[in-house]
Image (cartoon, rainbow, N blue to C red; front, side):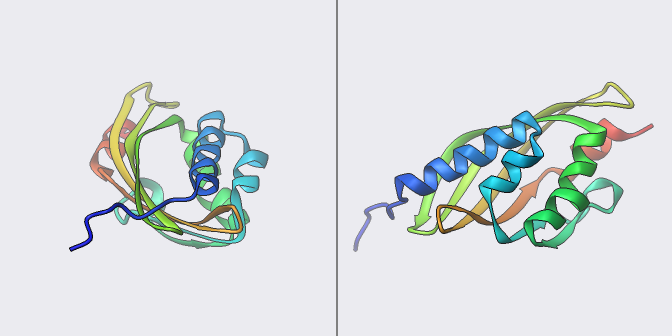
Length: 140
């Protein structure tokens, strides 16, 4: 039985780190640069404000999901572990930390992101998170 870990290219690890730096900075241009044009985002069902679902295209993800999140939460995703799955896929474990802009309540929610890569950029991100913590932070 082969128990070796699948290799993740250093380019893919760099692409993942670039994405998280762009998200922490809430920099739209940097986010777009980190994603392939055909990017697909899969956001946990049950997210507040109807954010859960699938977003096809990096501009759609930025406009219809991330910009809406950044408008209501000063969000700082903090990846803790980058776990290889295959040459073009990894799981990233971490926490969302932030403060809701309207309520002042803190957000601290664990996440698991399943990332796929193509052409040195992130081509897909599937999110798993504790959506109840998001609702608690945003509750009026």
